Image (cartoon, rainbow, N blue to C red; front, side, top):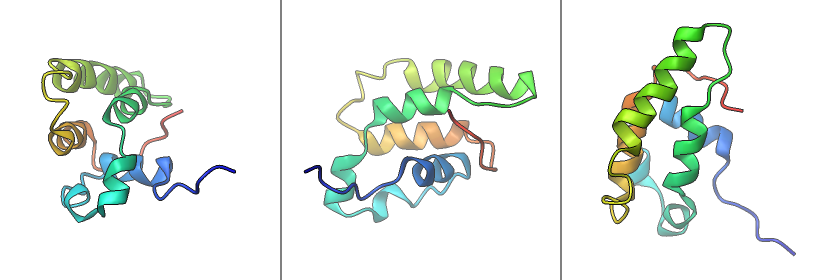
Length: 96
């Protein structure tokens, strides 16, 4: 029987998109253990939109801002999350 997850990916992506910067620091230790910056980076780089500029923006900025030296800062998941929040456009996007 699988354990129920504390965090929902749709909710987490909304937090990243809308730049809720205090989100990570307010998580419990159990919730922080569920955060996978690598997985979030993958979701953040993928946006479904009719606007090609939004798609290009997410892919380019996640690659240039978040992916560069990603493993160097792997011991700092809060920093990784905040970098992804910088990419957020202030409104929720659909991340397939």
